[in-house]
Length: 237
Ligand SMILES: Nc1ncnc2c1ncn2[C@@H]1O[C@H](COP(=O)(O)OP(=O)(O)OP(=O)(O)O)[C@@H](O)[C@H]1O
Image (cartoon, rainbow, N blue to C red; front, side, top):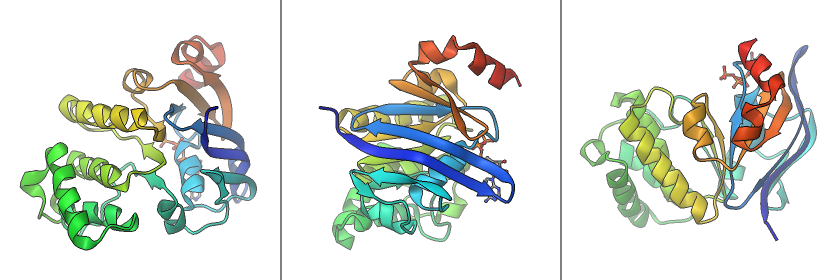
């Protein structure tokens, strides 16, 4: 039987009168990659913020690997096997690249030495060995996104939430990202990936969830959602 690693039910969030998430039911299985797409302002990042604990929902529940994490602080889901990347990279600017990556290993219980040794290997994998000792805020936007991928390798999560990983990065880096995601997914990590790059993400995912106005507008295979008139209309609008 398929193991569900992430599930939301009836998730809702409003800011003042703006209902940004309006009742989202979502399931992600181990080893599955779901693309989360939709027009600007649809609520995609807010949905990840709710799952990762950056926002508190007004209603609904979030289960991570079978445990209720609905009301937990942001760092707690990380210790329970959740990884999250951010549109502009999640690195701490004053820490070096290698310190940032090692932290992801320490969160999962590695000692400092072992974490730094693994971080060095992960940085080599993403091509960042030459800048391993540079402060993250001296790196380019694309390099900071690669730090997130090195952090992902160290974190070894059950669930990875990626927010626009390929925005503003060159094709060679996109290929490094694709290979890491595919390898981890094949080992059983569940991925929810927000992307505006539909060819890239449709080439990786099993399922697509289209959000619009905080709701699931459509869900299905890439071919099914691409053919859905409501999806076309939402994008054109
Ligand atoms: N912290 C916040 N306070 C108030 N409103 C917010 C906050 N975060 C997001 N919103 C609102 O939530 C709505 C959805 O925004 P969100 O960033 O989740 O959309 P998105 O689908 O990720 O968009 P994009 O593709 O442009 O990144 C927007 O109307 C936005 O203004």
